Each structure stands twice: as structure tokens, then as C-alpha cells.
Length: 488
Image (cartoon, rainbow, N blue to C red; front, side, top):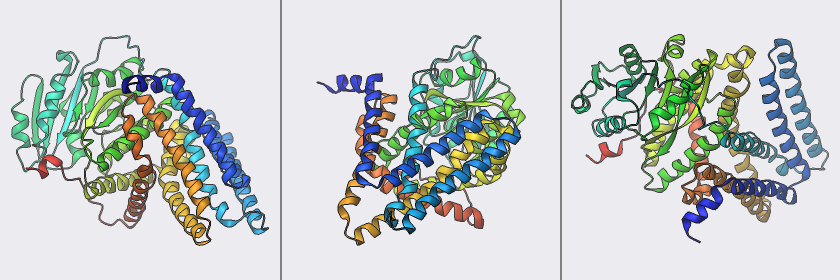
């Protein structure tokens, strides 16, 4: 059987159902490796958390909202206390009990992604039915020292499948010190307008571009990205089909999958985008419209006063503002290809800015957690994002501590067995995400690295970011070294 036929078989609905069945069987096998109390408490905690999200999403009356906010933590606390009592009574060993939180997190990640992602994959994500003619679009390209990339970005937009009379391209050079402005100026025409301003940061360049445009839809794209041939049409369609959609996220792909670091990021994007984003799209509450390609309804931007300067992740901050304004934020199949950092140093520079910006944005919008009037942002989007950022590093620390204690006690076999099952669960979850995408199956070989080394790297950077933001230390803009700039 050739590779094409194999991909065709495992990409269909039957293959997806088979993969989900295997994941369920693997979870069941954990009962053979760990005490039933541990898997049971983990499963119940995950179920309670998901139930809380779903029930809160359906409640609008503040009185009921407050009751649920009190009941759920009490239930979880009682469950954890019961497990602690089992440890104190000598009926459950402490080392096993420390696996409760990691178990609950893995259960929750799968429970909150697989069913929704599977359902959403077979419904309306790429089946929008616009009823009117295509709207006018202004594509904004903020650029700072992007002379090696700006040409290919503009050229990819010039050949995109969108009516020429309804698409304008606006390049905003943000005080570059290289030839970015000159390179962009060479494309000046009725369709491409190029402007230059003093350096003020990406948010100011984007706001300047919004001011210069008058189209119904604003599309933003990073100056190092390349759009797919139908990307603009695909990202505009949800806005055209539903007047309550205020913003639309793209499908981000890694362009330079040429070493182990970039391939791990490609797998991270596939799992994060194709599973987690699909779940958020089911709720119409996608948390981030990425800067590399995103679309906004002009009226939504005007209502929230465009981009703010007070976080390092202006795209995340703006998306939450749009959600707070009552708009839906959806995902799309619009493809954009971006360059990933190809060294650990460059990756660190990218992620430290992202995670610091995430922490800043969470703090800025934290009051949403206590305000049910914000609907999906209050019940699903922001809580899940905050939980992922805080519980992830804590879980990693617990796992490392537990493994160290277990090995010191001579129980190496049990550690290897549990670790193997967890890796297999991650591998099949990854396979499911790749099935939704329909290609890139070779990336599954990076599952172990993504679940161990890469996760540890991300968790350490996350912890540093939290500390930096709380201490307000060194919150400058950090960018990875561009490959083409490095090669000049």
C-alpha cells in the first residue's frame, strides 16, 4: 500500500473514530498501572471542570451564576480532601496521589477538545454560505526591518484570489533602518500603498493603517508571512455570512520545516490549532486572532478603539476586547505560512515575548472571570487560557518530582509503564489532529520530544514570564533573529 492510500484511509471519518477509540482504551489501561482512586479522582475533576464550563455557558442570571461558582470549588475541594484522607489513612501512597493533577489535566484536555473538535470538523467550519457580494478589504502590513521578506509577502497578496477592485494593500513602514521602505515602494500602484512613520511599535503601525483605510474589513498580516491563494476570501467569508462575527483567525502553518526545532513547532501548531482552536470555534470564542493573518470587521475595531499599547501581545489583547464587546470570533481555513525560529535562542526570544504578553493580557482582562455578562469570554475562553498557562507548569513540576521519588524508591518499572501510556495517548491525540489536517503525518515522530523536552522548555519560559510581569522587570520587545537577515 503506498503512502497516498494510507493517508486517504487514516484521514477519513472511520480513521478518526478508530483513533478516538484507541485513546479511550489507553485511558482504560491506566487503571492497570495506577490505583483506581487516582484515575477516578482525575477523571471526576476533569468532568466537573468541563461541566462547570458548559453549565456556566448556559446560565445568564447572576444569582445562578454565583451559586455555581461556589458549588463547584467546594465539590472539587471535597474530592481532593477525600484523596488526601486516603493518603493519611495509609490506604493510598503519596507518590501515586501526586499523579492526580496531571491525570486530571490530561483527561480535561482530551474531554474538552476531541468531542468538540470532531463535531466541528464535520459541521460548519469551512462551509460558510455568504449571501452577499464580497466586501471591500484593506490588508495592513506593519513592517520593521523586513527588507528580506517584504517583497514575497506583497507578491503573495497580489496573486490571491480576490476581486482586484475590492482589495487594497497598505504597507506601513514603522521607521525601519534598512531598505524595507524602498523595497515596498517598488510595488506602489493603485492596489498597493506604502507609508512611512516614525518607529512607535507594531500596535501604532496597525492603528496608523486602520486610519488610512476605509474598507469594510481590515485584514492584518505580518511582513514575514505568505498567504495561501484563497486565504483572503476564506478569512472574509465568516464575516460576510454572519453579522455577529467580529473577527476571524487563520490557519497558521510553519513554512521552514527544515530542522528538529521547526518541526516540533509545526507539530505544536497542528495540535494547538487543529484541536484546541476547533473547540474554541465551536463556542464562537477563538481566543487569539494571530497577527500573521487575521480579519476584523471595521465596526468591531472602531467599537473597541483599535489596538492598545499596554501589552506585548497586541493580537491577543485585541481579540479579547472584541469578545468583550459581544462579537463572535471564529476560525477559518485561510492558510498563512510563517517562518518559525530555527534555533533555541531565537525560539526563546519569541516565546518570552508571547508569554509575557499573555500574562499582561490576562491581568488586564482578569475581571472578566467575575462578570457573567461577558458570556463565552467569561465562561470558556479566558478561564481555559488562564488554566492552561498556570496548571501546565505546575503539573510538569509535580510529574518531575513524582518520577524522582519513584525512581529513588526503586519503582523504575512503574514509571516507565505510566510514562509509556501517557506518550501513547499524546501520540494518538496528535494523530487525530493530523487527520483533521490531512497531511504531515511524519511529524508524529516528534510526539515524545513535544511532550517532554519542548513542554519543559515552554513551562520554564512561562514561569519566567509570570515572574517578570509581576516584578515589572525587562518587559521589552524581543524578536527572534530572522533567518534571511542572519544569512545576509
